[in-house]
Amino acid sequence: MDQLELTEEVRRFWEREACGTSPEIVGGRPSLSQEWFAQIEEHRYRAEPYIHSVAQFTRHRGKSILEIGVGAGSDHLQWTRAGCDCHGVDLTDTGIETTRSHLALHGFRSDLRRANAETLPFPDAVFDIVWSWGVIHHADHPERIVAEINRVLKPGGMFLGMMYRRWCGTLLRLWVRRALLAGRPWRSLRDVTWHHFESKGTKAYTHSELRALFAGFSTVEIKAILTSYDGRYLPPFIAHNLPAAAGMFAAIRATKL
Image (cartoon, rainbow, N blue to C red):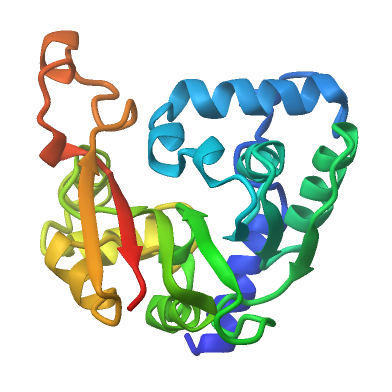
C-alpha cells in the first residue's frame, strides 16, 4: 500500500465519524446538539482523565496553540476556554465541521483547516504549543509530522500529547485474538497493530523509539499511562494491580531548542 492509498484509507475511516462520537457513546442524542457534545465530553474525560494533567489547559492562557487532529473538538474547546489563540488541523472534513459546530455552541471560533499534518499549512516558528492526543501514530509517516511540529514551534515551544505504546495490555490482548488464537502466532505485535487496531496503518512504539522520533527536540519526557482499556476483560484484582508499564498511552512533553 503506497502513501497516498494508506492516507486516503485512514481519512475514510475517520471521516465516517469523528473520534469519540460512536453510537455507544452518544446514544440516541441528536447529532451536533448541545446534549450530544456534552455526552462526548463527559465520556472522554471520564475514560481518559489524565488528558487534563498532560495538557494543563489553564496554564497556557494567551499562548498560540495548534492541535493536530481535532476530532470532535473536546480538547479544542478546553484550549479556547483557557484563553489560547487556537488553530487546528484534521485530515477529515468531519473533524473540522464537528469541531467548528462544537465551538460555536459555546460562542468560540478557531482557525480550523483540513490538512495532512505531514505538511502543515503554517510558516516556521509561529506556535507556543502543539497538542495532539492519539493522532500521530495513525499517519503513514509520523516522523514527517514530528518534523513539521518542530518547524512550526517557536524556540522554547512545546509539543504536548500522546502516542501509543507497543507493549501494553490492550495490544497484547489484540495479538492473542488476532494471532495466537487465529492460529498465526508468528505474526508480530507491530503487524497486528498495523492491520487490526483502529484505522489501517496504526503504529505503536517503545520508549526508545519515541525518543528517536523526537530526537530533534532539546528535551523529551515520556511517561507510560495505564488506561482503563488495558485491564478490560481481566479479573478485577489483576486489572487494578497492573503496572504503568502495561499502559497503552505514552504521554509526551518535548521542548524545541
